[in-house]
Length: 212
Image (cartoon, rainbow, N blue to C red; front, top):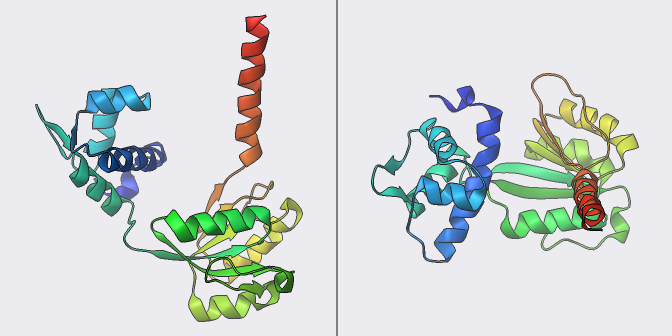
């Protein structure tokens, strides 16, 4: 099956498998069964086998999965060794944290530019200087980044994204509180950190209420 025919639900589980398996590898685990993966990840063994069979299976009956091999296969599926280039707009506290994460540990993405309207007041993040937002067009024309990471207020996110789309950006990792609408030919991952925290808060409140 071509990777373009695989459902997004399966694709979204692949990074979870990858993170779990790399943790096993660091602990010296070389072999694992689908049942063991399921128990530790809160999935079913049949779901895991079905997901991986979309790409060829990789497991052997009676043996399970070779952990290093499966890590390598998922890296190939997700193109983690074929880097895309990215820029980040909005180098406040969140932007600095996201930039630091990508520069130190993210696979598959090469962060090549940081931009902020108050660039002169912001220190470099590792080796990257913060550039003025007004230089975005020239930078994109010269360097052809594929991804933009938005760590800016929601009120300016849509317009900024539309401009970046015109500059050739194909994917957006959006940390603003605005949901982007950019039409076809562009991919958007909206990340609303507050949603997860509110969900956690609801669960804790419910637990405390039931414990009284």
